[in-house]
Image 1: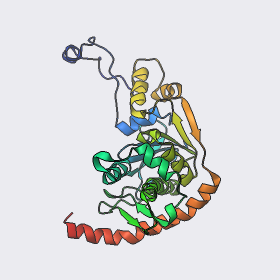
Image 2: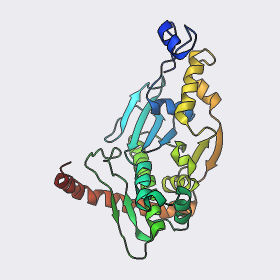
Image 3: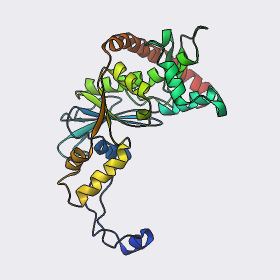
Image 4: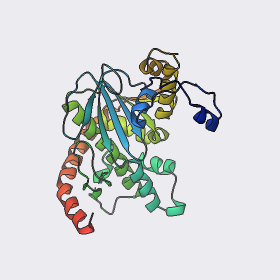
Length: 293
């Protein structure tokens, strides 16, 4: 990524876009790989988390080991001399959007209102557990027939409990993905986040508490957009490499530390989550057959 392509912009393309002929053109890449640069993730041990309708976990490593459910490690890609392991969750922000719609349709409460309610609930949502694999599972178990679930419902549970359980589920799934990459021989010392999750302080804190890792937020919440600037600056000769451009462009705005008491509580919740994922897998496969999917 970031290498100049050919002799620059062609006459036809230049005319269509109103730009000069021969303007340097930089080699791009997959949005997540470009986003990694926009997150300043250019050293081993750094982990980028790109959030939106789904979660994507990108870990740079000197280790090229592979493991089931972990994509890669890709050797010398997208940066030379390093390898990248990738994990993913197919439905995170999309499950929250779906749930918010169920909670009120056109008159649904705002995300901020739901977060404020959920923030008052203790870790573990008083025994309410959600599984976020509504559209299958990618990491740590690749399973297209995995489905979402909610377990432990009682009549004492409120809308706030349900929202909290879903927020927690996405973070528990992130922890499972990170642990799979660590088990493969990679490491993660902190999580740098971009995308939709940056709009929710409650959700960001939960990512830190559930994983036990500090969460870093940059000044620019759009990692892929800033990554494009890194590639363009490198191709234009402003920096010796995309990694050097990333180091110069990425600026930390906040660091969210895990709450030690919450981390201890979530160790127990995570064990329950893993049990729920395992026990619902066969049921999900059966129901997928009934539904014809």
